[in-house]
Amino acid sequence: MTAKTLLKVKGLKVAYGGIQAVKGVDFEVHEGELVSLIGSNGAGKTTTMKAVTGTLAANEGEILYLDQPIKGLGAWDLVKKGLVMVPEGRGVFARMTITENLQMGAYIRSDKAGILTDIERMFVLFPRLKERRDQLAGTMSGGEQQMLAMARALMCQPKVLLLDEPSMGLSPIMVDKIFEVVRDVSAQGVTIVLVEQNASRALAIANRGYVMESGLITMTGNGKDLLSDPKVRAAYLGE
Image (cartoon, rainbow, N blue to C red; front, top):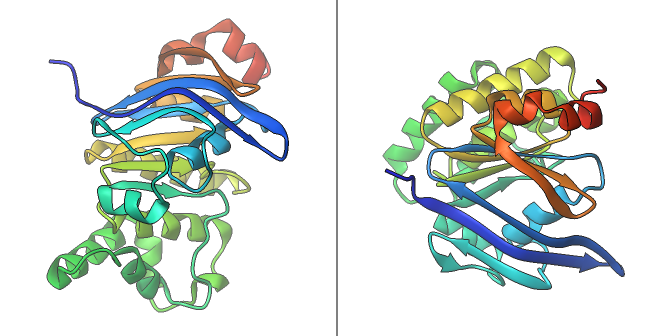
């Protein structure tokens, strides 16, 4: 049986500042998948994700989520529908503790017992956060803040989780940890779209991948097939 399509983007075009950043992108994400969108800096990956999640207006194209058009809806409405993005730069609440940040992630929920259960679940998934649960988020390392941003997003109980460059600027050890967590979250059944410049790591854990160049999708396929493709290896892995 074919998995249900949760997110479908057709002919997406986005321009800002007089620049056509996204030039007609098509992609889809099926239930339970981990889909990686790779490409160099400036390829249009982040712009695409911002348009999908309502933080940037799309000029043309269609965005369907759960078979319903969502173009023009704000990020608030999309979070309530289960489409949640962890932006590049993390955006944690620096003057709140880790626990308070997680509580903020559940702002659309009213099930107090369920929220407490999920906070404990986040502490199992991210043991480092449990150790620092009363620490102010702004005093944490970049990698720890990335973990917190992901945990906070999961508190919304997303149907589709979009991660924008989660490994950017992190130490190699922390990069390993972040990709391990992404794989674990995917294994728990959360559908994930992973936007990454680290092509080798992103494709290695992806069911499917899309390669983006200059505002266009230029290749698509099984994650491991793309990882072994000579063109991908030459362009993104320096081989």
